[in-house]
Amino acid sequence: MTRLKFAVVGDNCIDRFGPPLSKSLVGGNAVNVAVQLARLGHASFYFGAVGEDAAGHRTGATLTANGVDVTYLRKRPGITAYTDIEITPSGERIFVHEDFGACTGYRPDDADIAVLKTMDHVHIGWLDDGGALRQALTAASVSVSQDISVNADPSNLGTAGLSIVFASAGDGRGAADALLHKLLEDGARLAVVTRGSNGSVAGDGHERVAVCSLAVPIVDTTGAGDSFIAGFLGARIAKRPLSECLLSGRDHAALTCTHVGGFPQEPQPL
Image (cartoon, rainbow, N blue to C red; front, side, top):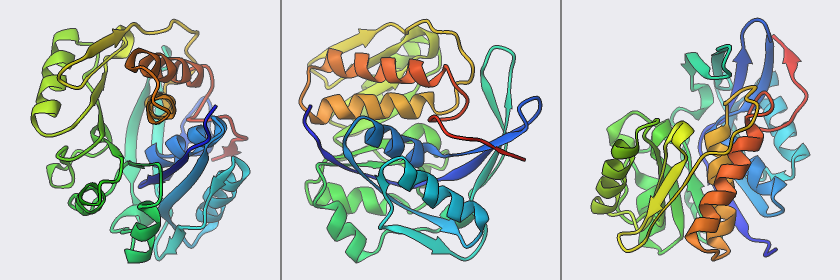
């Protein structure tokens, strides 16, 4: 396997699972992707911010324990972000409340951006910067992807110049193809759309590939989409065929559904 250098920029949080679990775990889109890339054997760097609190220390320690480089993790005033989650009997998760805490207003500085430009690939999660980082990196011809499903504010979203854009269309097949077409029309070079139980589809305007989902006993779907992104990116940046990239994403997402949280870790009580 080719060992690649990935950077993941954006959100982190403490996922607080309500009863009957009543436990908390470290998570967040960007953190989950960074950890999963490290678990795949790649050099993984996390760029983001935590609060000057116990939760911030826990987040940094968990990233380090999972092989992620936290040189560029900042501590900022305020609390570390958290998300309150309920899990349905079928394993689906419901976000009850989110507080982005120290993630709000975080921006990579010029020195950070200089480092990001040396990476094989940069993935952006939740980031409320009006698209500034995406624009700076794509203007420098850096390979960049973004998950537009984790940020609902249109001012922070955009696909122009992205090497890869990730999105979710739920279970709808027709809706996925329509979204795929729109993302490419808006300027992404490659669009990847997940379709829940109907699998996923990817295309670049010339090639379109779809794969079905993988049936596994579902414990919790938290972080499954993030694991999909990591599996897909590891294969894509290594120049594997598009079908293999989708299968890699699918298989890593399925594995994540078999345990609580975005990656295996020791939970803490609420």
